[in-house]
Length: 308
Image 1: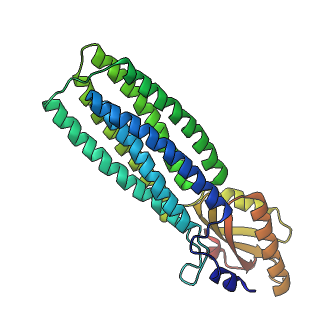
Image 2: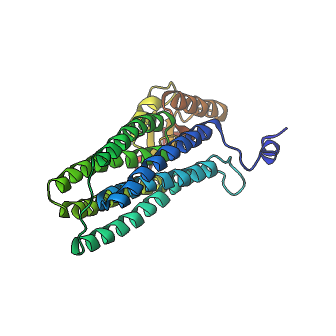
Image 3: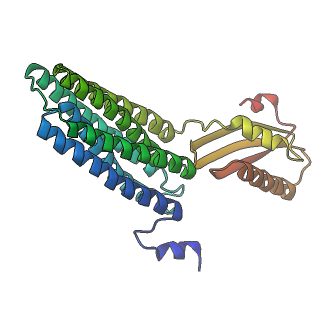
């Protein structure tokens, strides 16, 4: 049975092994994020602490981003088809942009709420339980961050990387909230509203960082492996030179286009075999390569055409 026939029998919910692992990680982290969010939001409202509530909404955004990530990774895992000959992997990167937009919205609402609280101050009711709640959530987030960051590196996942960034910021924000609670307890209630605004700005900064990294992928920024590629190709017998190297893509989905100079008398069959050898050598030494296009050229080519 041909490849096209196999694809035709696949379930619309098909996901490859990598995508299934990422999805399962996101589901587990979703449950933890919303457990943390619920604890901070509910207790924040009970004690009238805008800083704790803002931190809770930050955690809620992490959970919402997990859902976006789950949908994004499912779409990204779909195989190539007639309309998408290069696959769907960029949908994973696109999903991170949706996550960034969600963060911007939450940041705006928290800033607005913080400003209102500055002009209409309310003294939070800080108790020992407040610190217990924050300590509990910080411990969970530290575990989630370490686990998710490791899996992002292992699987080369944009979504897990972006989500681990959220979790890291959540840890820092939660630590700031603990100091805020101490300040309120010491008689400085205005600190609560100020810190909630600072948290919102921090969330907005994180969204900008995610947008920057995602746009680099979607706009085909160089993957930064040109020198490594040139070194690999130069060491292959029969290669007289290598130029016009172009490479782009995510760490797990890199596309390479390069020109190789060979003896002008080399026949087509040998040139074709050399191109295959080059592809195999590159894929063996560099992980994440999806496709390589090798252009064979005679070494008698005009020098002006060798400019890269």
